[in-house]
Image (cartoon, rainbow, N blue to C red; front, side, top):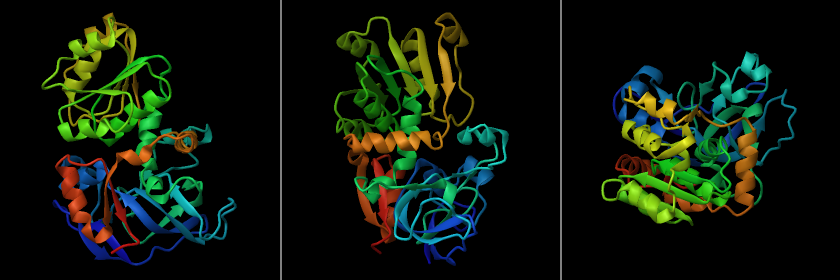
Length: 344
């Protein structure tokens, strides 16, 4: 089968051929129709320190996908069928862990990621535990199914705090940050401010209604607060970039008793004035992945309720042009990039 893989421990991604994976008795085999390039895939492409420590080469990468079931293991008891359109949770968990046995699947410390620790979805076929399969409703097209993984990160981050009537600050206008800002507004935030330094991404965010975008290189956030009537500070800040300056910005502009939720992963240590946290009584939460499978249910519900997720897709490419998608993402000039495996 055709696949995209990290074949050598150096920068780059290569098209290759690989055997069709065999399924176990508890697995399904999925014929991939669409995949999306993730920021994690860019780390692997660049072969940065995290990738070099984490990803064994060779490795078929990719973990954002949609496809159709073509085979089902003999012990699978879920109501799944051949030809069914599906996406899936890319975190493979240990069902015997204490977290899993208490129903907190997303907190399993033994989680293994497809496309990172085991062979991934940038291939014509993917084997996946039936437990992880998420059927796609008829009203959710497959290209949206391929970006449910990052959309889930956005929804999971937003749902940590009551957004109804809140003034929300989102720092970091990557695709997940844009989706989080749009979801916060869609579910009833009074105002949503999205900050970044990338004009392309800030312009993309304007495709969604009700987001006040701010390029912090050219605008002062205090002026924006005055414009929006936010005298005491934001109620909620969602930090989506991992940049130390953005964390500091969020702490500065939160009100007394505000909430800071962190999804962006800093590359190293950050200088934080902890006195700002303590003296303002800030509540801080760290967020990882999605809740299995409550977040999936909620995001499918949001799409069926009219959330315009398709606006985050900026590039649709046949898989043989994957290099174009990677280069555009590395340049910060995309939203989500879809690779179509039904076209060469």
